[in-house]
Length: 93
Ligand SMILES: [Zn+2]
Image (tube, rainbow, N blue to C red):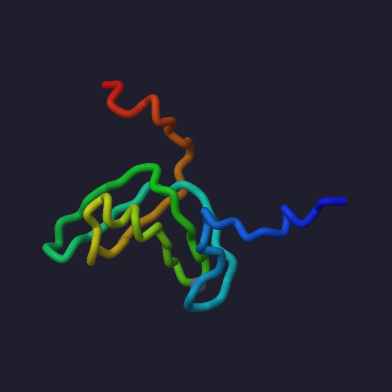
């Protein structure tokens, strides 16, 4: 039986546990507010992330942080999105 394939780590999701408390992370899609060093608040919807409930710490992929221009910004609010927007809805207005 060739079952070893299922034992491979999922390379696309390197974040699995909280780096502060080792707790399990809730991987989902979140609506978020980030406050950048200039104290501007910016809203982002449907951000894929991983939330540690005990720490209230939201982990977002570092590459995505760079794409959004959020280096140095702090997440001040995150709530799990009720609905996941599909890519087809972007710019539909
Ligand atoms: Zn934690």
